[in-house]
Structure formats: structure tokens, C-alpha cells
Length: 117
Image (tube, rainbow, N blue to C red; front, side):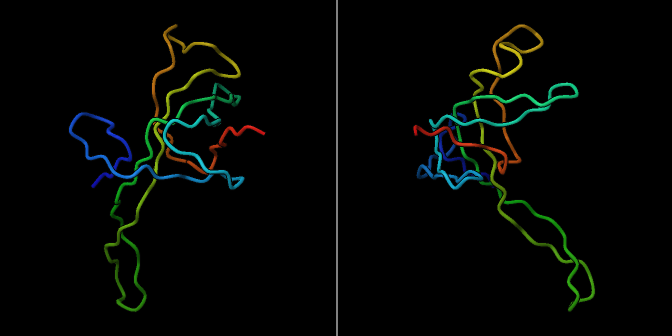
């Protein structure tokens, strides 16, 4: 079950526009500018991007229940952020020479909201 917070594709349900919080405690939402790290060879580059969607997805997994003595199925909500890169600290374009493509960030703990001030 995917709950996008904007219509990512035609026919997707639209829900309230949520906010997410970066590691410094600043909030961001769809349309906000953010910075995030990206591996580039043996280095790391920083990318500036615009948030396209904040997606919550129910994910099933198994965990060991000591009381039951076996594994049990559980669910958790996993949040990801879809962004459109604007520019990069190392390269202005991707390897193919085309503009940066939209990407989904699953490790959202590394996102930094760009704020004025």
C-alpha cells in the first residue's frame, strides 16, 4: 500500500501535504529545496534538489517473537522522498550528458532542508 503525498502518477490518490523533518530539525514539504549526499566514484557529491513527493509505504517483514518462540509477520511504515536534482557539487550533468533525472531517496536521514537564514 503506497500513500503518495502528491499525485506521482496519474490515478494515484492525493492526500494531505505532509512535512518531513531533516536531521537539524527543519521541516520540508513538496516543493521545498533540499541538499543530499550521493556517492560519486570514491567520493561523495552534494546535490541540490526540489522535493516532488513524500511517500509512506507499508512494508511487511518478519521478526522473532521470544514469547511465541518463532518468527511473526509485522509491518512498518517506511518513508521515502522523491526529488528532482537541480545541480551537483561535482558535475553539472549526468554521465550520459543529459539533465539529472528524478530519483527517490530512501535514506532520508541524510537530507538537509535549505532554509533562508
